[in-house]
Image 1 (tube, rainbow, N blue to C red):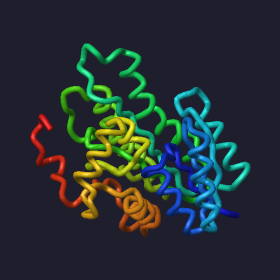
Image 2: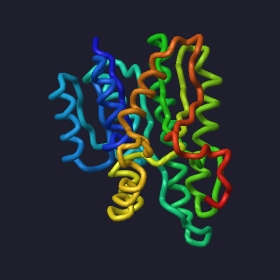
Image 3: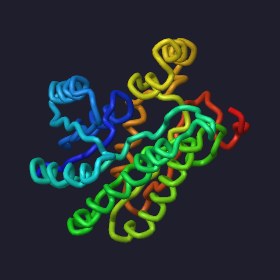
Image 4: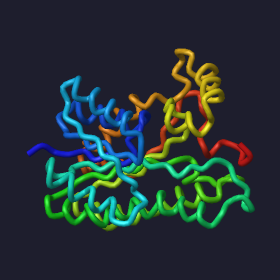
Length: 258
């Protein structure tokens, strides 16, 4: 039976490229995102045109029962989910405390923490019964350091990191590999960073940082690392990793006001 790689947060950046990479190795890739059916269809078409197997699924992961129903549907239609990738971000931009509503703060928690918990609670018993599996969780600099204006995002990402640690502590002995992957740099992703910055600022970023010098993270290169982590021998599993472009200063060397 074909093994499935489920990607929650399959945009044109990291998620979509991770899907392409796993499809190259024979996985059926289930690309899941909240909106943009046309973009989803294009990604599925690109994977199939390259000889891979993929399906697209519009899912609002915040809705009650949506993640659980998705997992049941995928396993019934395509086969066991061997690798799950949780790639949903919770970045809402810089907002002062007074401008961060309770609803906004809670949304960060729901996307950043509760979604990961729901994936694990639904999927891990199945993985344990089958003898193992992998959960790769995309994270951000805010998981390690909180800055002004990042109350919701830092709380969400910090909680995501700790949740990955507790899941690992419980399930690694049961052959489930949980990896927290910190992206500590700008990523060439038009529908995530591009939307956050706006088209003009994103274009200027690409012009200044990506003039053929690899100064911005390319999602296809990130995807190679995700694939590698998912196929490590369990005597040498990676549980936490941070990645950045070679020109960027690591998060621990940045002053707090950057």
